[in-house]
Amino acid sequence: MRKKLISLMIFTLFATCTSEEVIETIPPEVQEPTSTSSSSTTSSTTTLPEETVFATDEYGIELIEMKPKMKEQFDALIAFVEKRTGLTYTEYPKYELYTSNGYQEYNELSYLDNFEEDYEEGEWERAVLSENMWGLSTASPDAMKNLLVEYQRCASSGSYNLVDKVLRVPVKKNQQKFNLWEQSVLVHELTHTLQGQVIDLAGWYEEMKEKDDFSDYAGRRSIMEAQADLVQARWESGLDQYDRTEMNSQQPNFTCRVQLPTYFYIPNELYYSFGPQLVKQINSEGGMEAINEALYQLPTAEQIYAPEKYFSGEQYEDVSIKDLEVTDYNLIKEGTIGALDIPYILQDTIGRVASVKAAIGLGGGAWKDYVNSSDQLMMSLKMTGDTQTDLDEIYNAYMAWANAQNRFTGSQSFEGGILFTGETNVWISSDGTYVRMLLTQDIEIFNQISTQINNF
Image (cartoon, rainbow, N blue to C red):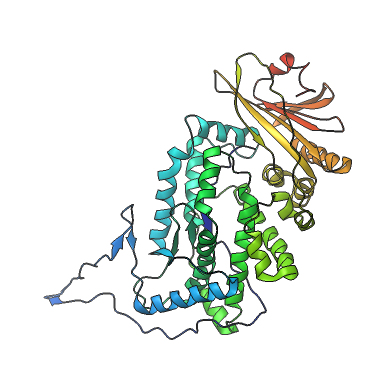
């Protein structure tokens, strides 16, 4: 319900697509072996000359030079992306090429560099506490930070940064040409680069950041990733079976050093699974021109989950949520609830099908967070459904989530709802119009707000 812990600034490639459409591609050529070192003999000692570093990035990480044949390939890929999207670059794409290790190091250092400015004082600790109270994690703020650093390191094969507008991909060192895998990744990220030139994505991101409201992010991101996947699939469709096998064998092995929570990846299911399903329908109705037009839209996550809601233009209702008056608690933050928030919280407990089904029925929602002098959190939520059946699905999904968790030591009826007690206390209620929830670490709060709890 609050700012997601995962960085919003990087578009990343996690998987490639396939397509049956046969189109032109850049033919692979046999790469001549290149020597990376020489030796001179003095007695029996062999010495290696120092390698000349082409350039370094802002963090001092080595960059790889784009060789002349690579540049030819790069230009051909640019032309391919322009032809397949029907869009035109307004300026030559900015890029940085890294070794595999260098790319992972950049992802880590850039994330840490932006960390302090992304979160105000105490906001990170509250964000992690919120994850803990929802039962998503038991990690401390430091441990969660380390997990997210690892996620940034190992989760992508290439990226496009909305802010500095630079495409970044890892490539093999000391090669004269891009291999097939690298070309496929470049097609995907070049599509993002072109999207970023056609639409002022940097300005869009900065506006969301200034408002501290990223509710429009998930829908547009889904359309962008789906279009990039489609263009990438069309490039790969020009490869024969031998080249496809060769391309897959060239994929770098970016393994995570620690086990990452599965809910980290739930937003990616929206971007890379549900998004392509919607874009396939958009493409069927109006071709790439219609997809380009969709880039300018700001669809809701619900529209991505359920394409019929995209085509009907259905939007969320404005849900008003009143302040709660509780001794020593002050309102610290508030926002709206979108369809992605429901699977993000519920999916690991009740499964993808049930959580997405509940998300598709969301009419609208809002939340407010309060904090006391001991940095304890109280969170209030209020949601409505598109229909009475949808509201019941939302209520039943949250009830199933609560009933499935061993962390709650008991449950009881309270003011028309069910109160689940434990280290976090969760109250869930439905009055036929709204589903209301309250989460708090302090069970005594419920004695104070018994007259308010059904009316916020």
